[in-house]
Image 1 (cartoon, rainbow, N blue to C red):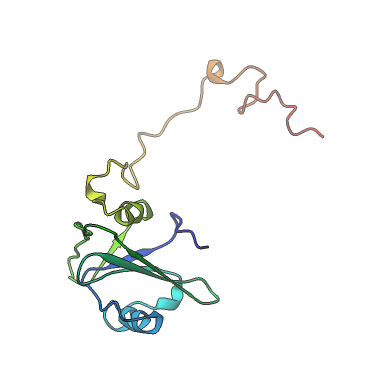
Image 2 (cartoon, rainbow, N blue to C red):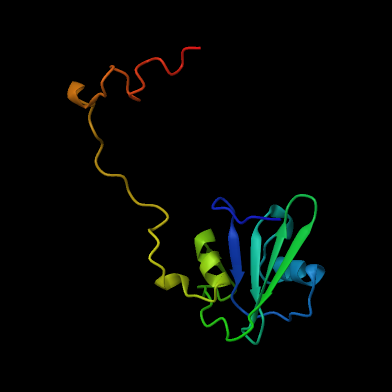
Length: 144
């Protein structure tokens, strides 16, 4: 089984592909159309022309995984767009929403990065937990 984790790069092909293509055909799409190396561990997501199915192509270091999901009813109404019209990079939590035929732009997930506030000064002695150590463990946690 393969898990799509937050540190993985996920690229979505904006244009639909011919779903008769297997691993070799989709790897060729990665190289020629998306201008990406399919052997780098990137997760590639493709959509069918009918908007009813998606495929994932992932290289795990030993071989390729090809995952296919076809909806029983309905279509994938939302699909990412890209400035270059070819590929869009999405976050892993957005992929989960796509898998559910949802719209990731409507999810209320926090932004992936936010600026940290002003630099805080040293903590006051009153803020240090009882026992004097920063973690509040009383200095005994690391003693064998």
